[in-house]
Image (cartoon, rainbow, N blue to C red; front, side, top):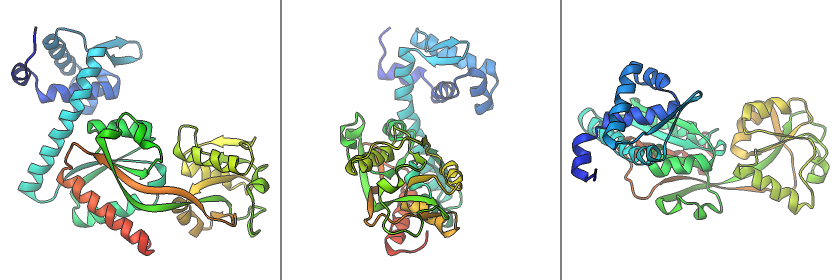
Length: 320
């Protein structure tokens, strides 16, 4: 059977793609049915309709759930872009008919989660309380592909120095908001608090919390140790969880690297203090990525405005 755009348009239905995408996200027909408020037989019927139309299996069913066949991967990859456009169309129609409303999907790294994004969300809710914001935290390896296919509208975080080599880079654009500093932090009663300056060599023998090896911040940490002619500390926990890291530092021995904005609110609460290394450390630029070939919907455009306002407040020293 040879497919044509007209034959696909006549036979393929958006709700079938929504169900298929949810099945793969859930990894289970039952969990997809629960998420969509459908019965499992209804979900199974829709998948059978899709497989019948394409005359090939789209799912591999196993003891641990379902995964996509090669054809299924192709279908869902294209379906995500179609569903992103459907979501934008829904938002624009709602915004036109009812005023400002909609749904914005934001991907973020830990570096932007502590102050910039909460302030942007506050500004958004002041202007448009009915807009729903969904936040997805992850690494660039996860967020860039999601942005390229329309699963998220914006990705906010540190702009990698080397992001241009990635497969998705021709499809993405970036806007820089501000430069971020980096801190070496410890509990407020750490033995080296109050000493100035403190060198990395002084801290090398203490327990450290370092970012996981797949993170941008870990590359920065490794570079700092290399520039100081030091290897990675021997006593290390790898973690990107801010709450876990703060708890570990309450032993008044453990040391960690954190972006300044992530440190500030906990320092104000007396839980942490930045150690004085004598020279400032640069973390890099904070900005947001968006798809170059896809217009933002009204809710996402409004959130972008709020993000830029929150950035201006940051530059002016206004508490976020």
